[in-house]
Length: 161
Image 1 (spheres, one colour):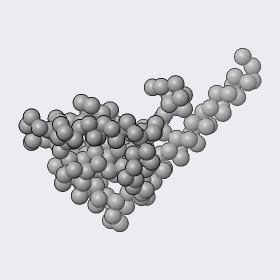
Image 2: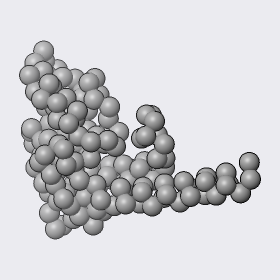
Image 3: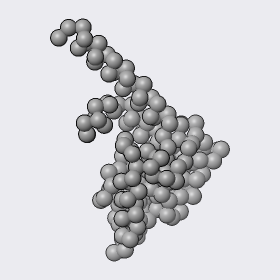
Image 4: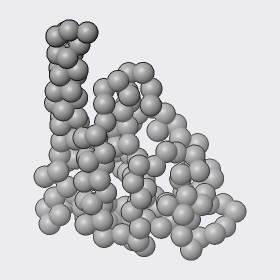
């Protein structure tokens, strides 16, 4: 009730700010590109758009070293368990970006072999519309994820969301 309780919330708040600042500026994306949107994902990493200036330059191809999953392209029903396994192997906290019309809603490919949006089996944090979306749209989604990270609290990850 005294000074300790006020200082405790002060330190927790400041600790939230420091941890969130470091998380948002050091995202390690794992690309999961299976169609033409993957080309635009690669373009966002090149020098013209330079995704590294936002702190997401260390592309990891191991889910255990990643905290941002970039999914782009058509996801078939046979590919769905693979994508779920990759997501489950990522450490907490983790975020998902659904890139393109096919990944977000199935696009023009409304067939029995394709999943009509990855949000049916994965929690998606940001959607990028387009067929294929521009690299600027991927950078915009990355900035959206960073703003989302800024507002998170440590106890949400420790005690569950």
